[in-house]
Image (spheres, rainbow, N blue to C red):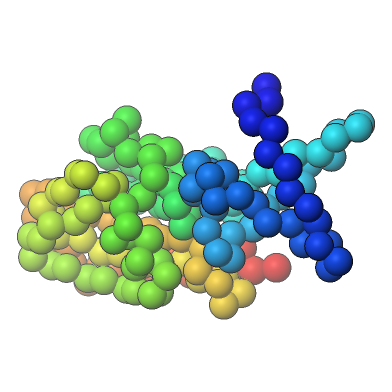
Amino acid sequence: MIESGLTRKIDGLGRLVIPKEIRERYNIKENDYLEFLLCKDSFYIRKYSKLGRLKELSQELADILNSFLNAEVLIAERDKIVAYSGIYKDKYIDKTISNDLYKSIRRRESLFEAYQKDLKIIDNDVITCSYINETIVANSEEIGIICLYRLDKSVDETDLKIVRIVSKFFSKYLEE
C-alpha cells in the first residue's frame, strides 16, 4: 500500500507542507480542502470534494437535463467531472477538466455561446458546439461548473435559465 516514505516536519503552528510531487499527482491546488480519515493507529488524508459527495444527485440532475433539453450536460468540481449525461459519458466521466474550464471556475464565469465555437472539456480534446457554462458558487467559494452544450443546434435563453436554476440549487444546497 505504501508507495513512498516521504517525511516532513510539522512546524510550531501545526502546519505540514505537502510535497509538490504529491500535490501534482493528486491535483491538489491552493484552497482545496483535505479530509483526515482516522483509523486505529494511523490516519489518511484525501482530497475532499463537496460536489463529489453529491455524485448521485449530480448524475440524476445531469440525466434529467439531458433528457428534457436533449443536450450534453456535465457537472464538474474544480478538477474533475463528477457527472455527465449524453453520448460522450464514457469519454468524460471522472476525467480531469481542462485548464480552460478550471480558469472559468476560478473567474466565476457565466458563458453563453449561442454559435458554434471550440470548447475544451478535457485537455487535448476540443469539441465544436454551442454551449453554456455556469459556475457553482457556495459560501463565496467556487465549487464547480455546469456545462450544457449542443453539437447540432444552438443553445437558447431557456437552456440558460434552466442551467442557472440548477447552479443556484447546488449553491444553496452546498452552503453550510
